[in-house]
Amino acid sequence: MKKTYKIDVDCANCANKMEEAAKKTAGVKDATVNFMTLKMIVEFEESQDPKSVMQNVLKNCKKVEDDCEIYL
Image 1 (cartoon, one colour):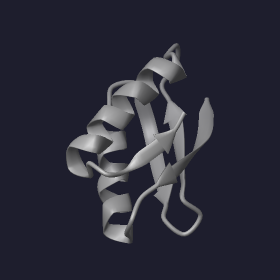
Image 2 (cartoon, helix red, strand yellow):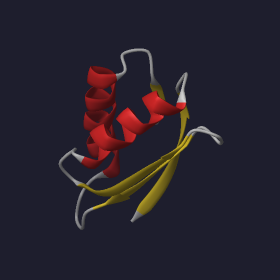
Image 3 (cartoon, one colour):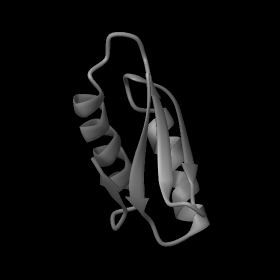
Image 4 (cartoon, one colour):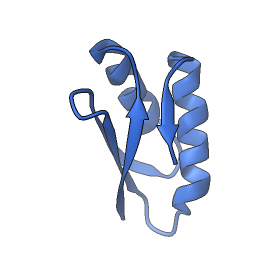
């Protein structure tokens, strides 16, 4: 399952950090961050709950870029 989320991030480098953090999160099969559109597309692994996985994605993204935001 893929879902798209609106994000708030200041620069392209920060967006890359968010993408890498999202990809390393348990339950995420793949993630892509587009800085130009301020969107994150997340593909979840089978039988994962997107809401709980996205809470962990947000935590991991905040570790690398503390002023970023993902609108869940």
